[in-house]
Image 1: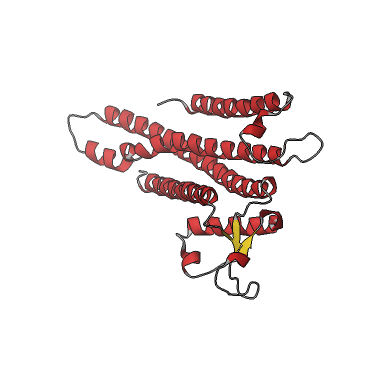
Image 2: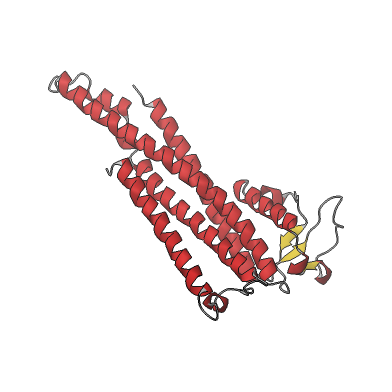
Length: 259
């Protein structure tokens, strides 16, 4: 198994390379007479004026770092989870006890090696969970900032509709009057919308099933790209929660199998 310090160096280089690529993209675009980012991203890229396009780029940068963090965490957690059953001290000790053809010195040497391997795997699980938690935080932040930056970069688009919230929004059938122009969306609305998406991913859509809402915005189903973005975010975030549960269960397995 690769020593933990070498793995950490390699994973750090992944972050450095990713961010260096994003910096080069930004510098090359800002240094050109006509920013080439304007050809592939919405919004304005005017220096000293409307910079909504650059806000989209920076939110995309945050999203790239979040996804990179998730990938790095998986590179640490998946191999460690696969070794959990292989370093079962209790089971290995039971197999070696009472065997006359195995000297005590050999048995102790094997168990010491397994303990060392178990400590290394436990460390990988710990750092994997930390990186995954950081990635989950930045993923939520990236989703919120990207959503808000797109409402400013595309002010005449319609990404949201109004939904029924007890005491705030009248419960009327959905219609054209409930579709919201992006320029009318506030930062607080996007924050509450993000909280609802996180709750839906963690609680398996229970709030939506029972009509529990804390914000007045819902996605406009006619905007397919935004719906796909929400689906990918909720899937990835739910997968992160699942991996955290698996790693927590693996840690409990280590604790139960200690001699």
